[in-house]
Amino acid sequence: MAELLSVQGLRSGYGRIPILMGIDFTLAPGEFLGILGHNGMGKTTLIRSLMGYLPATAGRITLDGRDITGAKPAQKAAAGIGYVPQGRQIFPDLSVFENLRMGQAGKSREDKAVIDQVLSLFPRLTRLLDRRGGALSGGEQQLLALARCLCTQPRIILLDEPTEGIQPNILDEIVETLQDLRRQSGIAMILVEQNLEFLTALSDRLLIIQKGVITDEVSPEMMADPERIADFVGMHA
Image (cartoon, rainbow, N blue to C red; front, side, top):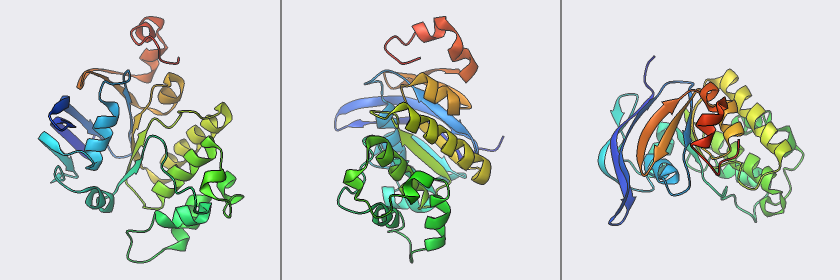
């Protein structure tokens, strides 16, 4: 299968503190790739490095064969990489609709048709367009963060810990929305998550990260094995 994104020997960290110790993987068009690991193993560092918020100290990131290792976040966004950060980071004082418009801030002109198309995937948000982002529930804010990302029309979504503090019915809605999105658009995704049920419901394959290194690749079906789950005590099966 053709490669959309390729990561080779990626090293990164915070100042003089190394976190990623040489990450290698590829992402195919339309593939949903899960990254699984305990806290502190480098999951969020990986996502932030891919997006350009942390500089790579070694290694190479290519998109469609083009080297984007040193590109800034805005350049990577323009190239088609969308980012939904941990904690959502919506604009609490802006309305839902204004938050969605911010997703097109880097475009030469606003395209309301794109916003309308995104809203067709999020009927819950359609009823809340005039409500302040800060007045939404945690689950609704996560939906808004995802919808805002989609307004950039990305080819790849980097999704960091989306289930944190969210009620189960919204989690089911997010899973259904992402599955519908893939069927309709063929978008690819890298999903960092500790909730195994959520992760296995969406991922085509899972990479295990430990101490900044990818140590294993498994199928979602393999994580149904109790012995596999026992290797990750503290995660939610």
